[in-house]
Length: 157
Image 1: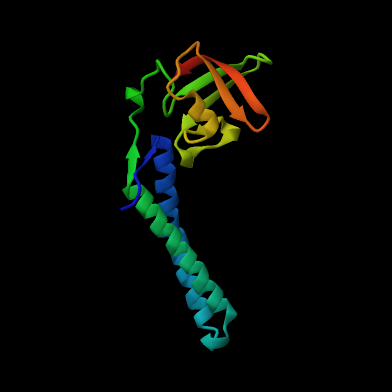
Image 2: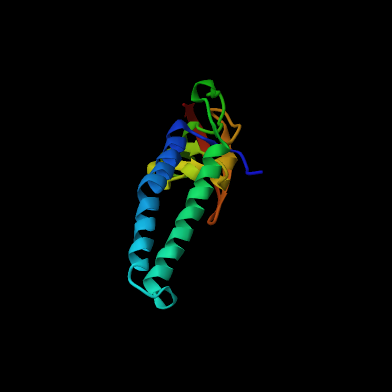
């Protein structure tokens, strides 16, 4: 049985959109590429046909994987998230106690992580260090450069 994964509404919609695109657009294009290559003659020496069949195999594999993800996806109810402590989908503001710099991150499921957008994976060591903590807590985080200490300034959703 496939593993159940949790998604925000936005994250699950992105998966569904990608799956729809692969099925509605990419799959017919792959079939057309195979048909076109097949029309070019002898299949035993047709590298274009082999490449098109291989591309179709990769596409079908991706479609199958996405279908399994969507089938086993669970949507997180953001309205029921406890904002008194750090949990999945919490938006946290932290302050580096050494430099005073403030940063804001959203803790998201692993598949939705994007550091440029300030979204960090719930499974990352950084996010894991903050899970369960409350505003005002001091949290030590192990980073490659050593230990860093942060104050949890705000938790919201």
